[in-house]
Amino acid sequence: MSTNQIAALARTAEPQLALRRFLALDAAVTGGNAVAYLTLSGPLGRFLGVGSGLLLTIGAFLAVYAGCVALLAARPAPPAAWVRAVVEANLAWTVLSLAALALWLAPTTAGAVWTVLQALVVAGFGLLQHVALKQRQDSSV
Image (cartoon, rainbow, N blue to C red; front, side, top):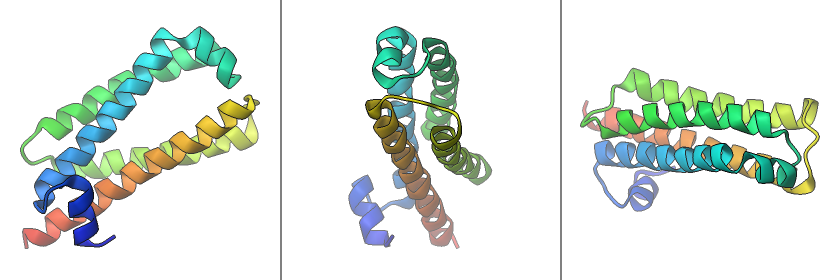
């Protein structure tokens, strides 16, 4: 991804601000999923074909994770090591989601589509954050 593409997506040419915006967007989307899973675990579980207990557990985890990512996004200069941890967590989530779908989940068609789509979105966040971090590091040299 080029600098211009990242700048267009983040609506800023400043790498630091782009990174913070991608972290904030990740936190907002993750937090939205957490709220949905926590408040609608029964109906969503039936629609997706997964247990409501699993959705409650995932929702609690996502709420904590979203809060941590939001705190990182709020920092004027998020530490590179913590940003890398978020990128790696996003990539791990992607792999785990796809592995769960292939190996042990038996969701509805909607649940299978949702699992793949959310994995792709999370991978996209990881990629955007990685590229923005690299651009921030390159601009400070």
